[in-house]
Image 1 (cartoon, rainbow, N blue to C red):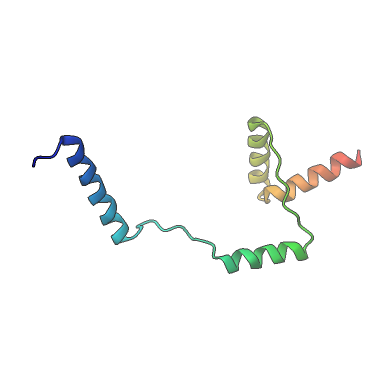
Image 2 (cartoon, rainbow, N blue to C red):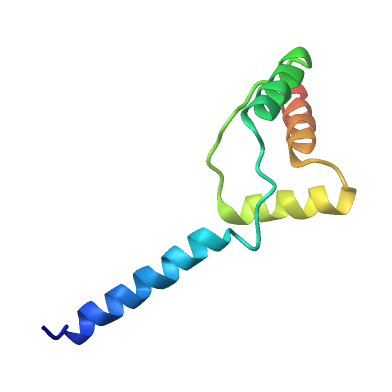
Length: 89
């Protein structure tokens, strides 16, 4: 029995996908293990840090990231500084 062209292409794609799986990822990410995440969360907790998610306009975020890069400081530290200044005034 002959295969339709689409079925043939689908099988070729599966073949390539399986070969990639077997060979492994040539660009592995530095995956953070569960114990690493736990240790990091514990360190942050001892420092009194709490995760805080907000939604900001994109242009504001770009300005904040540029400022953090210019100062060579983590964005979280600068945000904390700016919030302290804003709440003090």
